[in-house]
Length: 413
Length: 104
Image (tube, rainbow over all chains, first blue to last red; front, side, top):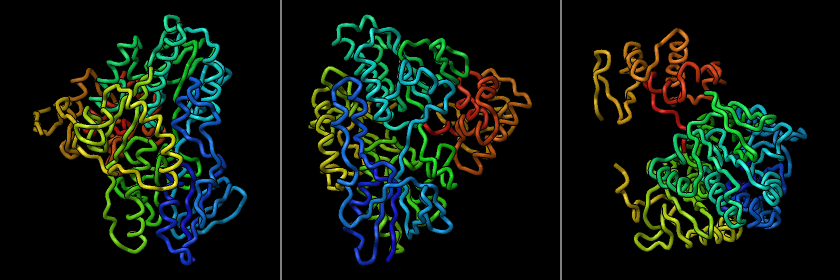
């Protein structure tokens, strides 16, 4: 009996076992998935919880509900991988040998990596919304916050869902407007990037949207520390930005066991071939979802599009054939902009987000890089699709690879 | 791809003025590029630039400021002192390497 071992039952790991179980004969292959957490969090929901748009209980379900029959689920912490021995050690000492290993252990926020960030003010005036606990605590804070200086801050790239901090900013602007207290809130968006977003055309659109909402943009800000006595963030080039409420995106890093196993880069992401997701070090290890170092957004949509191509590649690889379905880094992100509207961007390794229509050229129904109500409804509907279509590994009628059809290229010059 | 003559050498550059060919770089060119952005190269500057080029040769991508600190041993604060405001970009420019990734 051969064993496929999957570390992590989040978005990518769950899709992987759902797609691979039907392809691997049950009398030849055992599939085991290990995760330290029994709860599956709908992570796009973390954005909405602080504003009371989703209740916390609406974004959690038991992980095992999404693990198909014929797949063993082990609820345990991974100590490390011993890739030369083809085995994984769990924290309780259990050894799990494998023939093939898929690392799907994602990325997590690390406030402790920035001096002062997880100090006395953490979850008081210093908040984050990249964890369930953080999103809930921030919701409680916003409920009776009386206004002042709101600073939304990104520590360093890459982060999970690079549009989320912008969405949070737009939703905060809308939230305080609807509460009738926008004039009491001074909003600053602080980023280590040169502009509002990572890619030039979208960065200009999104930068203009910040400006029209009277949100100050502070670019090129590399944080050195949070001064939680004087309530300010300080950069390496000695700029200081005072805050009454700091909503920060802490440094994001891959799982510690990846680092301990010698399988990660300096942020614990597994170096892989960006077209096949095969480890650059070991021929029987893949990394999927946020856990890899592919130069694409760390986002569920990327995990999903990659996972449309991955099973075919995996089956070819284990049968000694060349992998023939190269992934292009396709990402597709709804960006909530407040007041029931949203924006959509669609891009890949080579092509930055451009205006146009998606998925049908000229028709849509979604508009790229443009605020529409339809885009907002796309995001709202997505939660249902996530639980019912994506996680169980069913097909969405969207092409896995990005298409230029429907995109306008006039802004590229 | 446009070309430019820097310190008497003809080199290929991209539209942001970054060298595109690893092997066309030399220290004369680096000193000239540094001067373009108002930096006088000292021993400390050279140590860092040379480390960055060695690391690129090994890894195939430009080190981020984080990696320059954790692997190269040059504290981030020092990078900001040596290459003010935008160290990652300025270091890559002088070292004749592409801008570091991470911006996705």
